[in-house]
Length: 329
Image: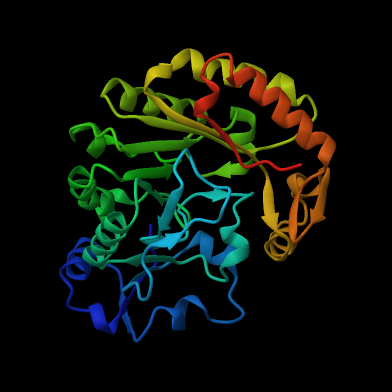
């Protein structure tokens, strides 16, 4: 899973550091002053590192809880996100992380107590805050190693005015099924039709596996979120996505669906250029795209087609109050 482990000097003796070193006792361990001296090196190959990544254990500095940009949310007005990791174990072709970071190594911030304190402090300052996990990583993919989510669930049991979204493609949900369900903790899965999942979401569980995990969570009493984001435009878009939407909503019970979000492929222009250079043969990057206000996304005609069709299908199964979109025309 990892080629070696780097550890920041400041946290060398931290209990979590020691536990991870014991678990991967056969791996070489290298001490560093700050993770950036490894992670931010120049002339690194993201693609080569992706095949043989290292694990970097570090302490998160500065602001641990950040404000979500306007226009992103699932019903709340006070939206925040936090990242206990940098980089993802999956290898999705549309992911902005491969354009954002020069390194594919995984950075794990082990100062979980500081994250908890920041969440509690923020929850006291605003009304009904929403906290989103899964921006810079997959929330659950390495949970069996990090134990981070299991550690913060008790925080959200105590601050019932706050909501937590766990954004994921991972089916590592056994620990959640052993926990008492929480109405303010939403496990939100990114879902794509199987042909798209196979073509673009490398190393991630299949659509069927994710749908099964959602059903297990739902049956156990957990609220779930459906994230149709990014929607990928293609020839016969409706033929691909129509049966897909039907299968999702005929499998799941609408009552325990907290929210559904829609979004299309989009990327900041700077990151898109890096991704395009990394995968010059990728068909996704040769589709009907345009650059507008520093963002690369689909042209207005396909955007409108994607949105109108998807909305018409989804609103057959859920009330409009549960549907949120990040699409703009």
